[in-house]
Length: 111
Length: 111
Length: 145
Length: 145
Ligand SMILES: Nc1ncnc2c1ncn2[C@@H]1O[C@H](COP(=O)(O)OP(=O)(O)O)[C@@H](O)[C@H]1O
Ligand SMILES: Nc1ncnc2c1ncn2[C@@H]1O[C@H](COP(=O)(O)OP(=O)(O)O)[C@@H](O)[C@H]1O
Image 1 (cartoon, protein in one colour):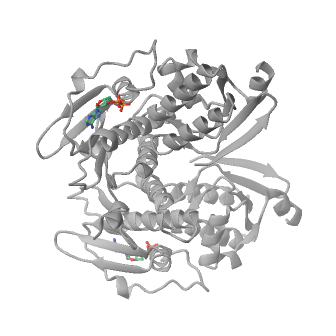
Image 2: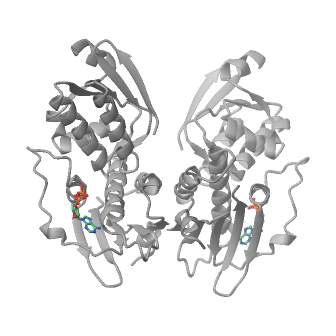
């Protein structure tokens, strides 16, 4: 799975360079997030502007990352959601759980 | 079929706003080119940067447009071919028949 | 069945290995079919996403819950565009389950689980699961108008 | 046939109305399949274009030359990814023709005609046409390596 990591002041940006986040790659995505958290990177910004499609397992993995980050007094925020991907968060009401910013710039401004 | 026409000095630009030029839309494309020629627009520049796919009937219609324009002492030139579309011209050696320019700007400079 | 109705029918049958690697392929085929449905008044890109999603969820469920590893013939999917309706069938050879007894997810206390059937039931108009010795089938229908 | 070989097989069967409107749909499905073939050393985008093209040409030929308007059941296409080979079958119910006696186009004096079978023969490794009372079939094979 193609992920790009960038460490910035107080946070780690995780860019998902895949068109789909689904049952095929979400287990690996979960592992990568867990490793980050274990290594003390508890503030994660997920940039997903390349992701065209998210299924229930992708949503589940993002939710578990969010919960794990919170339990470590950190945070996980989402940026760059394509409109159809955003609809999946709205349909499941997960948009009320996550902090979602249109762009990385806005996320960084608010961080 | 979505075609855009622009009249410029000494030529007509015909932009193909379709992803495919195939047996489904090439008969209509042929008619539109014939109408142009009948109306005296015998110098045609075909801009096809949006076309991802051309089949044998698309090539056939372009060739017949070329021949008709030539018989009226005009010309038909092609611009904006995507690389895979260009390969179809090479495979059939039609790239030796047509004048093909990478961009519209270059075609106009040479016109 | 008149000639003109008949003319607009499309059927796609796919068999893939029981492996998540092929979810995207079948999802893309679902999107391709959605783009070609002429008599749909809604947004075709949204329909494409939704078909991609219900196909993905149904196949992922077969891989996770509905596989029989002794007798693994892959996953069979069929997408049938009929006159007024789109019918998707996904078969499995597992022990089956009772669709009606699966509780809806509690969206106010999300756990991340149970969203697959929620999407399928929410995005399709009619969903049935039929069990048989010869194999089970999840049937998902969407009215086209 | 070992388990692991079996695991990589994909089969797609499509039925479309005898109408050029659906050429793009089947072409796109061919491209989707090409993108998922793991054991192909060449350029997958080029393979996708080529499958799109040979499918389009074969279906256009069925519509132009191989249709029986009295008994029109649509066009049947199958795309089969096997162990070392990709097999595409396109059926027709017309009067058939002799593939071997179709002359190659004269590329030095192009007329624009006869390029469909030229593309099919050039881009695929093996092409056969079988005639039968029950229906004819064009079989196009491509080695995967
Ligand atoms: N094809 C199937 N065969 C057997 N059980 C299934 C099948 N599909 C779904 N289920 C059952 O329905 C439950 C809910 O499925 P779903 O909503 O997709 O969420 P999840 O797979 O995350 O549990 C599954 O946990 C499983 O018990
Ligand atoms: N399915 C078919 N049934 C009958 N004849 C066919 C079929 N496919 C091809 N042919 C014959 O082969 C010829 C060459 O086909 P092709 O190379 O695709 O070029 P074109 O269709 O432009 O003539 C056709 O003109 C036709 O006579």
